[in-house]
Image 1 (cartoon, rainbow, N blue to C red):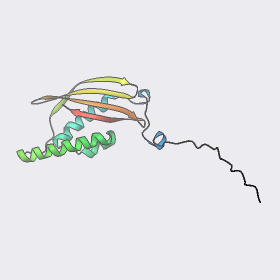
Image 2: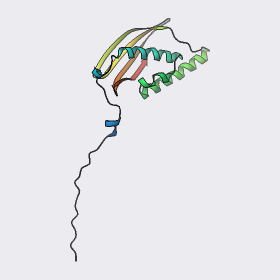
Image 3: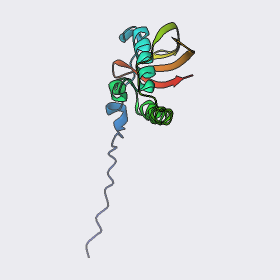
Length: 144
């Protein structure tokens, strides 16, 4: 009769790697990013023109995240339907960019409001920029 062979337990530990830590968007410090004010004003101008139908939404796809893109896409569809019901054509709006107020709640994040003055009304655009992958990306845009 042979004696049973004792079982050997492997005690090797495998480190758990979370892919998003290495391959997902990487936060970037505000010190490593350019001044956000020109981007805030240009994004505001583009969003107003997109909602008016004078510019394509795809033109700002690089500067906004997926949630903002989907939100703006819904607004574009609603605005184009409203123009169709009223029988209006899409036209480039006439407006000027007013005051830009910038606040930084933490490093790499900018929250701002930009006023837009048109012929008949003034509006405010609220934006949130986050430093991701060495550039600013808009993670929230709301036209008020």
